[in-house]
Picture 1 (cartoon, one colour):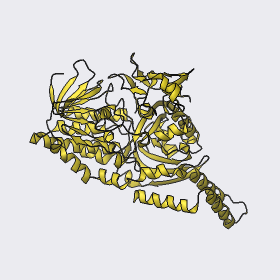
Picture 2 (cartoon, chains in turn yellow, brown):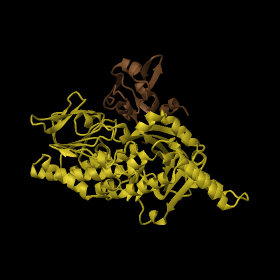
Picture 3 (cartoon, one colour):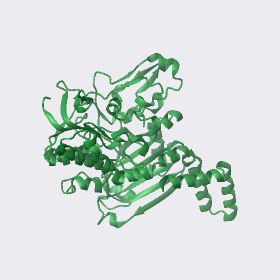
Picture 4 (spheres, helix red, strand yellow):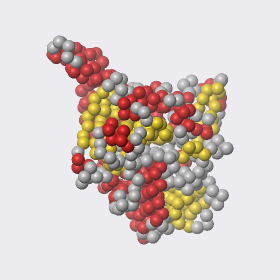
Length: 434
Length: 91
């Protein structure tokens, strides 16, 4: 490709496409290089997306036939033992009315493809089926474009945005972001299970077009630091389960077998009964938090979204952080293009925008949360089993006075976890999210 | 449901040229007692055949875990060529 561009974006995910939409809208000559055969074909998320961040980029997204699966009206949190578990849930009609599209489910293959179409309509160019193999540098080590695996592979651009996702050998190769350590990523597997619309509405007690999310902690991750989710789509459920990669290696757990056991859990099995599996996927989740964020811009380049390790574990926010970081990157690039200053200094607007936004503020707030989970394995082993046993005993009416039951339960807990350790868990947990 | 059946649900456009390679087979054989790639790979790409590890790269889900999870960093990892590899229908 002999043509020169103002901006080259690596990756047609939410970060890259958000930036492309805004840049192309301002008449900036923008190209997006995507390795999949179409935008979204390599992309995965649990499946929820937040409307606020998308609205900042495409305010008319519902009218543009955005492929929304279900509007989420209820969030459930489960804490599971082997044979049962606690369920805490919150539903409010406001999420079906005024705050509709606060959070909704999507299939990323469909959503990203649609999102990229919007960028194309605004004038951005998409080069699919193309892997970026390296970055082009000038004699002063400034980034001046990208190298691709196409025959006429070099593509020159004034600015490059790396938005190629959490699994980015490119980011590592270029020295911008070291390879994540196994404890900084979770490896999650996902299965999409087809059911009829009516079955989903009945099983989750929702009206057509509305849906439920379930976030799950407990023994289903086999003592490893991990999480599972169930999200409702229009005609399917998304089941995901994952754990810290270093934990998986250490415990010698096969992710697909963990998924099979999860599907058989008595709280899960009735929800998926009769469903047909239609797709199986695997992906990393950037769980390193605030401390794993790399240098985010340099001479001629910026890093956004998952490539920049922008992920909020506690609130399952990832694609929305990607979109907003893409938006900030586009705004900073517009400033740099106007000034003609493509240096790290000229792109500082990106960093200051991130610092002043909810993205850095939230990630800073939960800085210690990842470490809290990592250092308190009881949360995934003895504690859920004990908590379940406690509820089971208290709820069983068999002539034994409650006081006696409490005494037995308390002694059992003390035998498993010392009161000091228990206090420590609560204190550390509180400190990690306060 | 077996992992083979799960992978059967996916659409792959397989490149003839493998994108994964074990750099030094003797490291796996003699220096790596745990061989965690045999467990954590979500697509069961790495399989033990007699003494050596074989690579079924055709079913790779491109998560990257083996690249950083191999304790000896003994796996050469690239993306499949543009347009090849797994393609999601739903995502």
